[in-house]
Image (cartoon, rainbow over all chains, first blue to last red; front, side, top):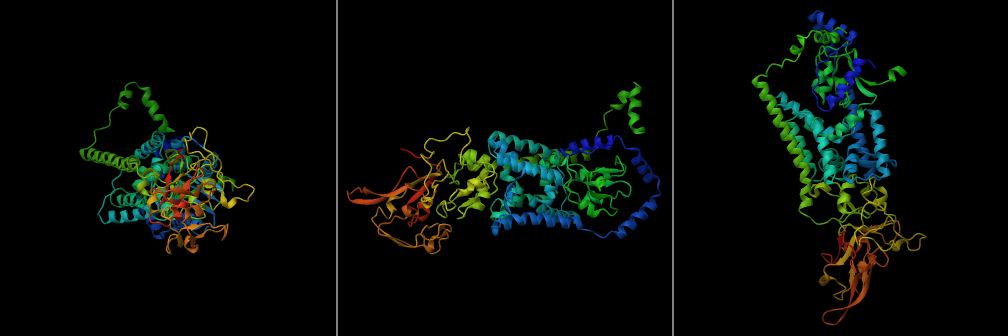
Length: 327
Length: 295
């Protein structure tokens, strides 16, 4: 791997744990050339090109629609499996069986292992299967492609952004290091108390069970979170709190599926950063920041594809590492 | 590479070195305030989330009523530690006896329990399917060696399932009891009052199901579709799925008269079928969850 990209690869891991992205110390010569070209090209020409691109841009929801379809299908499969007793995907998102094969959510498995301090074979099998599965599929893609709370939060976010536009509320950002702190605290609490403390408040588990086994009072907690996100902090849970996201983010470090940024055609308008759940992973699109002509986006990216949809120049695309070489 | 070389050049001149460590200029007041507000919000969210998480302790502290857990459940603390709250046990139960607890159960939210009066486990599945379904070992056939067995919780021998009595393997693979049935309201027990029972045990609107061997071994039917008739009420004995767990015995009332009474024996696994079928309201016989056999 290009040493500059390697450095960025490791820096992006730190960014996932909460460090703020920094200006790159080193930029590869071909990327420097493009940056220089963009600085020296007549600004009006660039703007004209941008306007041109804008004119051509019809709001695409291709990836969002695909993602919502998958997310709803996955959760619906849980529901119909139980409701019609067809036994395809039994259980809930925390642990299930897909036509008999154990699947166990990594964070729930971790909580149980730490609290119970005893690991049975089925737990290992299910956890390993899910680990390999999401390793191949992109790590945090679990969040945007499977987690039912993510979808609710996405809708709440739309409401929040509308209120922001109307100047009725202001997004109040929180320190991103908090999520790492929560991850550690919940792990320690599980060990110390012997209870799976996080599972009691996990909106992912609560919503998943509510869909499958019927609603309960626990949904009030989810509702409170959504209200908080609408009126105070944009996507508070997914951005600053959820340890599940961090767990899958770690899995995503080595995942071949990611979003790839191509410097050349980018107009640096920043629309991608505006729609992104984790805009710190898109620091590379800021003018003069890209360290190379093509930069893979870091592990904290949920691979949701909103940026791919919104980019008018196709500078952000889905990429499977090694696949393009293979084809 | 020119950018990479720059810092090296600076390092080369000794005078430049302290210059490189100059403190950044102080932040403006508004920026400092913004940072402070962000910090306060962060602390607030931390407190809120941890407060919510730890409120799960409250039901544990206020020692609420013990839940009847599905067969094979580890002791309560270990059970809550190991249960992953997926509900696979709920899905396999042929009589839908298992429910998942709600928010009021604190750390037990999403953990399975049985409300025996509404629907007891009558082992209609023959093989304790919920244990088979459990992915984390919260429900087990055999406890791992490091977990102690409470005295009296262990069953003297594998329970004999009446429905399987003629099968080559008539026993249930269950080592510990879920609880013990107790005649908690002898004053209302129909048998002790010398009375019989005729009709639907729990009325026409009752939704619970039981397996009746005389009807269909493989298909549990609603209790309301199976009226009873007994000269002296013995519905609990009729409903019990376990051999030698409960029987009608002659006892003497305080006035010296002879009465029949249901008597629970050591083979009782605590499934709750007797509590479910008991026609008095409230039930005269009940399961005491997690109770052990006392001799």
